[in-house]
Image (cartoon, rainbow, N blue to C red; front, side):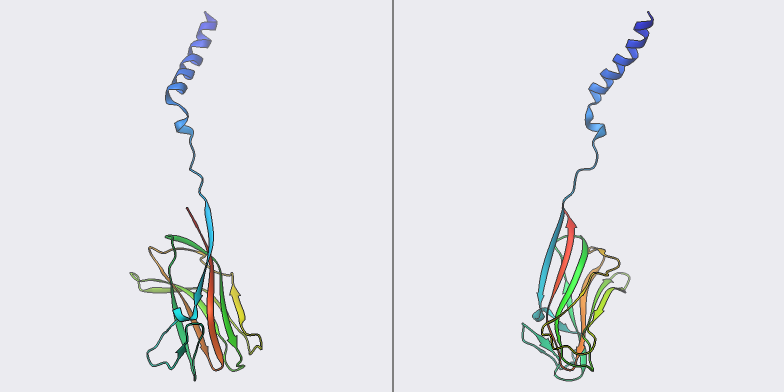
Length: 172
C-alpha cells in the first residue's frame, strides 16, 4: 500500500509531463549577428549651406576658399544597428585647418540632435590620403525607426574629403 502511494504521484507527474511536452521549456531562438561595412564616396557629401563655394568631383570634395561643412546622410539594411567604427579618408595639407568628422543622430519628432562621435586631424600631414578613425561611439546602438543618422565633415583650406567607411552590425 505504501509503495502504491509513492508510485501514483510519480506516474501522474510523468503523464502530465508527457502530455505537456518539451514546448514549455523552449528558450529564445538563437540570433545571428551580421557585421558589415559600407564605403561612402565623396560624391555622397552635400554642402550644409547653399552659400558655400565647393567642388565635388565624385571621388573627392573640397572647398576652394574658407571653410564649411559637408553632410552625408546614412541608411542601413536593419532597424537596429550597432556602429562599430567610422573612418574618413581625407587630405589635410593645411596647418591652419583641420578636418573634423562628427557622427550624429537626429530625432525628427522631438527635433533633437545628439553627437555620437567626433574625431579630427591635427595640423597638416604629408600623408595623402590620411585616415581618421573613431571607435568611441556612444550610444553605439541606434534604432533607425526613431533616429536618422548622418556624418558631418567640417573642413577648409587645403583639405579634401575622399570618402568614408562605416563598420556596423545587426541581428538577423
